[in-house]
Length: 441
Image (cartoon, rainbow, N blue to C red; front, side, top):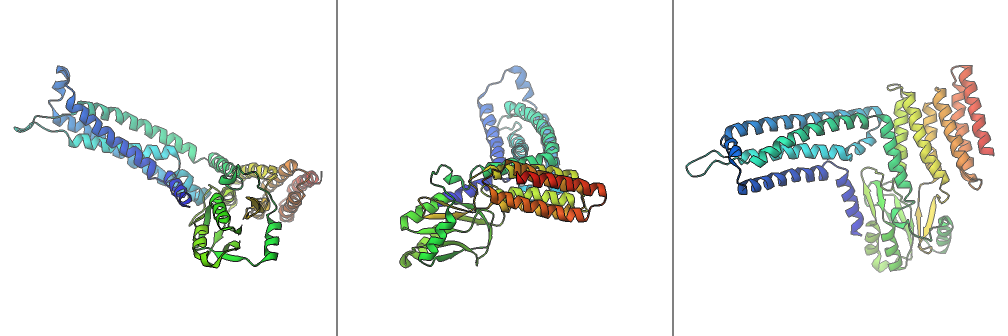
């Protein structure tokens, strides 16, 4: 049970500003001590020895290098704070985590702080000549410090160039879409990807179990969002104690202490507390959502950016259209995935897990359509998205096609009623007709 918590902690460390910047910082410290050790054992020739006879000049050079580096570091932190404010106010605060997990930002910050610490260690070890000790100027350490100064300047240019790229909405939307597709490809959970007995008959099994005996409800121990579920560990618990379990909590769902996260059949009364603890350890609940198993969080981020772009404060329909295009990528993948269903059964029919259905993903478009009802261009792009998704759906997916049909009419109705001109109304009617015709084919 422990690996689930360990994996979540490890992901948090990788996506934060602690682990990777800290490792790069420690690398700078190690380099400083290595250069000092080499300087104590290297016998330099005469021309270099003359340079080493002036410790005060070397201190002045290293002090200047340290000042430049700390100024660059302060500039980078200032740029980062501006980027955080821009992304939070213009797009969505839920996209900030992607900025923290960016490897260029992490390595640049850690490298600059590490170079500054390197210079300070070299500076502290410079010693003037005294009656008891000879002068010591680490020539290799000073040369490496001068080289690292240019490395720091190069990192500043890289960071500025990368920051300009990272805050562009097209790149933010593409990154969110790519991460969400990675999550969807693990369907429905990454640790059952290779299972062969994953079927969509979970609803029938739950009805059968409920008819045979009452279930024991299992409540969440804290309020928050379900981040990860280890189905492999749940299987071990179910098979070990000969249980049948229906997991109602899926990644991305908000639960409270009054929320039933699982229903268990065959739970022995004498071992109930122990088994409950084991089941709880298979789920991780946190204060926020993430994209590891929660593809709905990516769809939510793109939807939020679209809604922010349509607000009166931002008023950027082009950004809204761009995000709708990327939402189309996700919906096309979902509707093409024949296996998606609300309830799955796995492991020889003793474990049923609940998953987010296609309808839950697609209904995000209704919220966008409500805010875009006065903009014919955005409404037409929404209807065109539904048309493209319906074109990919197979004939057997009648449930999805019916839902897409309802979505198209729901989005078009207020837009037709609030059309500013007859031309806008004609455009919407034409696109709606094409969309409904595609769904009827």
